Amino acid sequence: MTDKLIHTVSSFLKTHKSDKPLLIGFSGGPDSLALLHTLLSLKENIAIAHVDHGWREESREEAAKICSMGAELGVPVHMKVLALGNPGGNLEAICRDERLSFFNSLCEKYGYEAVLLGHHADDHAETVLKRILEGAALSNLCGITPETVFGKMKVWRPLLTVTKKDILCWLHNRGLEGFNDRTNTDAKFLRARLRTDLLPYLSTVFGKEVCSGLCHVGNESAELIRYLDNKVSPYLAEISSGPFGSLLDLSIKCPEEGVELKHLLRRFFEKEKITFSREMLAQAVHLISTGAANKSLGDCLGEIDRRRIFLLHSPLPKVASETVLLPKNGTLVWGGWYVSASPSIKKKGFTTFSMRFHSETTKLFDQETFKEETTNWLSLWKGAGRVSLPDGDYFLAPPENNLLCKENISLSKWWSDRKVPAFLRHCAPVILQNGRVRHEFLAE
Image (cartoon, rainbow, N blue to C red):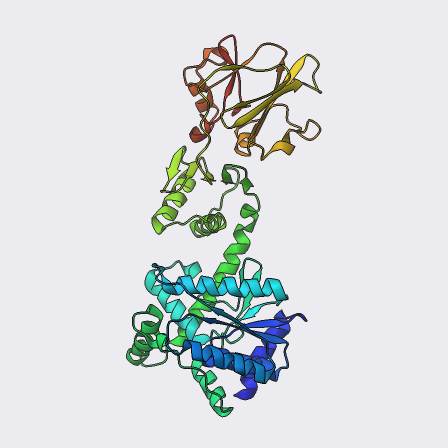
């Protein structure tokens, strides 16, 4: 068994590690203790990071023992004591985030290649079972993965194929014993109930051990995720972002299979840090699949229009209410927009009006690089607009629906005929001449 455990960790490191030092997220329990000693046996350059959560009376004493052990083994020890008080919410999740933040700061400061954690096959099985009972998607049953990235920090779990029983046996044969954390069997925590009650019960009723089967389900799910991620990556690479939010445009090409579209939307929401429910995801899939126009999405700042999905970081700017004379040459501020006028360098006798949202897209208005003489709503979504008009007197005005455009068509009908997304129609000014709309920045 000794050779098997060391071989497992050694094989993992051969496919992952460079020559940088490694950091162990060390609790002092059996799993992290086994990981520490396998790495010492392999003569790896390692350090220990321990977080004292302060949940148990003995935790301070254990932290002191870890510092002493590190000194005896010649392994650097980084220590952090949490003082969370009563934070409310999911205490386990809060503490996990605190640990990861601590590990990340150490990796940045000391150049550790990755954080190694002692998760094993039983932990993997618990996670898969939890997600099955929660009704997670098939592509989200993978449980714990061997490698994860949090920001720029890599997290490795080389013991994920090893059972708890094998770890305890390995430690026993070496005369090693980890700390006994009573919270691991505290029934107030869901994981403890899964570990001590539900999984043993299922194995007894089923007539054989169920952990290996659950791990297999998790591995199959991970394979499905890799496949779906590969399928949707070209769409995600085309996301258009600007000062208002991000746009996923599926109007030209859209996944044909529902499972692929659903996975794409999940990844899009996750990338934009949007919290979504099953109901919201199902609504988005339906609206995209049917090509629905001008629909709001759930409780988030989301809009769907003809297989385009817009996720807003904040509400769109409110336009100003006054009508003002545009300068022949110069800049004015109107609502949230900066509008500048200058002689066109491409057309003699024309004035170019450039519009940008605050200062975020200044570079876009360089006359040398802004190739489009006339822009549309997609440019505006990116925070910019431009048009060149014959020299004359023009006014900047709010986009009222009853204003008339060419051929006596109302502004509202003009935009509807040209399928301009409804939620964008009143966020930018229009240019008037002789009381009519000479130009609006949404339709070419």
